[in-house]
Each structure stands twice: as structure tokens, then as C-alpha cells.
Length: 78
Image (cartoon, rainbow, N blue to C red; front, side):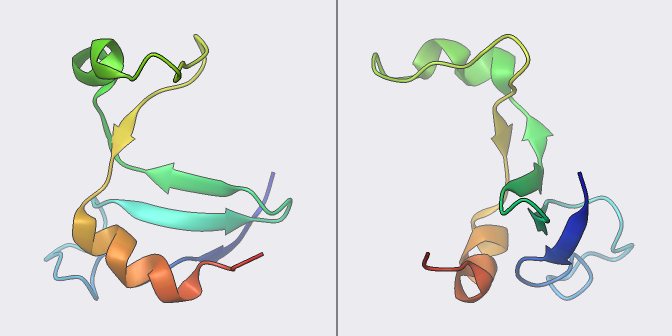
């Protein structure tokens, strides 16, 4: 697995004082995406809709709205 590029603005560009411990989105060499966010699996697991599920190795993470909105322009359409 290899990170190809950041998607959207860096944490520092989004106003993080340290620029190091904030949500982030990366495109991987295989076309998938990696997300750094706050693990809220225990909180939201029971809230998942009936047609949604996660495997034991998957986690539910939250990123800020600003992180995703500012990444929108960099997300490929296909």
C-alpha cells in the first residue's frame, strides 16, 4: 500500500496550529482512499442503518465537514 497524494487541504491550511493531529484524506496507489479521523465505532455502530454493516476489522471514523468539503475538488469523478 502506498499513499499517492493528499486529497484536499492540509491540516495546516485548514487552520490547525500544529498541522499534525487533524483529519486527513489520502489517495492510495490502488485507487482507494485512506482517512485519518476520530474513531467513533463504539458510539455509532448501533446507529448504522439496517442495510449497512462493518466487518470486525473496520472502524467508523469521523472527519470534519471542512475536511471533506475542501477535498471535494480533488476527488476524482471516475
